[in-house]
Length: 375
Image (cartoon, rainbow, N blue to C red; front, side, top):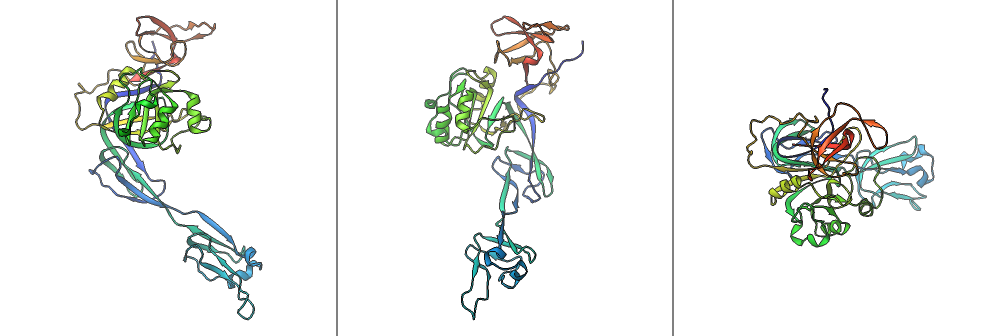
């Protein structure tokens, strides 16, 4: 039969991970090939142009635009502070002068005798790009940024909000199916990546923000809690730019759903270790998944280095997660891949697979209703 493929989430105790750290505009790169960096090191920096502030001098001085140049007391390229005089009329016999002062600090960029306007550009906005993960610089792009490589343990989530952060992993729940509530969050979790079990409550997220945790990770979240937390409904777009003061990641989905035991045990095994977290998610073209990246101090035994399965390929024995009812959230194992389409309960035909559930039961599930657990 032809090979079948389906999307999957990566959960692995070891992979070689490389990330690109790029400036939005040209700037200065602070590292060289071979440098060892930590997550919070600034690897590149630049300055974005400041805000543009137009000043309509002709209007404020009540004169034709062509006469404005005779009243301007600054030149293009001059630096001005708030309150500095930038234009002044000659008045009558030296009296009754009209003065225009700058309302912003910045640099005089242009003065136009055609429009009678002055443009004052605000102070440059500094931009710093941090390493994000601890590792070694393996490539430098002059004026742009660099690439950092490290051996890591790696977990992809289903959905997240909030941007890049880093902190030490702290376990808040004792089991993968324990709900994460406010009483699990303690003061010593400040700056930490807090790991729960099943659904995280809105109170837990609020408490984590209160103690200044870096991130909170659990199996699921209620969509109503997410809306209350953000203050709006999320559309089909990219997340990661939310200003929440904390990064939130769910590994399984929405609702009362437990974290996969394998994922929980992997994170638990690295309790106390520094991890880098990014909640950015995009579910359309150019799919992005939220991630927890744990740089490893040593390389674990990984056999002969060969993958057990081809990436993305459905094969008998592969672990999968069902993503539709009535088995939503259940992790099982592919036990059969029928070659012929199957008639579903709705009367439609679809390609299916047989999944062996943890209970030992075998369920027929459309192939579109599962995702791989990549290793």
